[in-house]
Length: 214
Ligand code: DX5
Ligand code: ZN
Image 1 (spheres, rainbow, N blue to C red):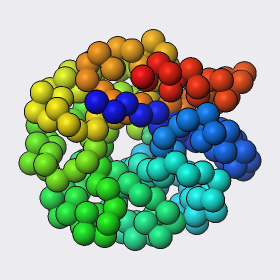
Image 2: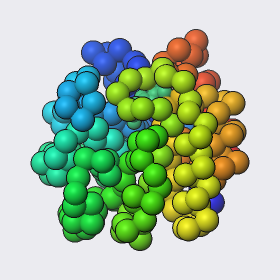
Image 3: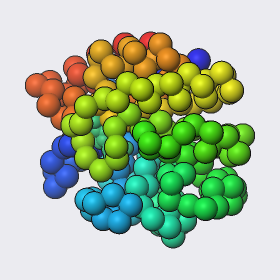
């Protein structure tokens, strides 16, 4: 099973992120995870597609937009144009998850669905065969640097049994210890923000996590 590291830029200095993205790519990060917040689905506002398009040339890694927004489908085209190969929408943000997953696929974008800690795994079962990736939130979305919610891993094990080939990503509070726990539950994509933003040597921090990922 492939196992991938997806650094999130959220906890870095967003006015000066280019060299950090270059460093993390050089160190082997396979995905750059982009946390898009609209001030509605979650209280904070982060950045939009223009910001992402300016970063695109800094990395050859997969760009993944995690849309923490209402009406996520309004943003699909802009983030595709900005260079995102994968787009994740929240199951809680739409009544039309089936259509949204299909429309991403039709656009040539890899579809992913994200699920909050308070939402049962059953909510995504109807679209499980339509997505490439499920993002199981291990914190409540909105902020970096929160504490890992271990009970969310029940969803990871449940989904892993249903689809052995699925990319199952965990996001929130991931560090070398929680990465191991999440991996044992069946996760194979790991978003890491705060732990890397605090690293004294970013390149080495990424290399260690990539190695741990296996
Ligand atoms: C939270 C975001 C996460 C966050 C993870 O709403 O979706 O991607 O940046 O950050 P850490 O690793 O700091 O918990
Ligand atoms: Zn995220």
